[in-house]
View 1: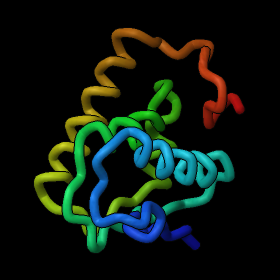
View 2 (view 1 turned 90 degrees about the vertical axis):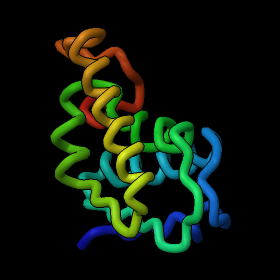
View 3 (view 1 turned 90 degrees about the horizontal axis):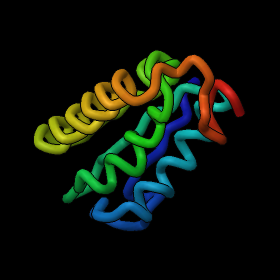
View 4 (view 1 turned 180 degrees about the horizontal axis):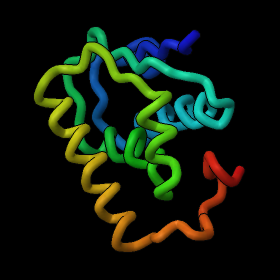
Length: 117
């Protein structure tokens, strides 16, 4: 059964503005992924989501290329507005494109990596 994270409750805010808030969500997501637990991220009641928040939460999950299929399989985003969904897709696409250029991921150099904890 998937773990459900209600962002409004987690952050105690209707707005997802900054990197610090993103880091809070990132840590919850990373914990689920390390344990190979599916997670639903529910944005019900969220009024504003910035790219800084999305980069520091979802973008950070993609520190190396092998994590992409894990994130796609285990993370489900629900009740996000269309504009924010477009930003999230752009964040993920940009992160993946950067990985292809910057990190062939033969040996993961990152600590706390899902594949190399």
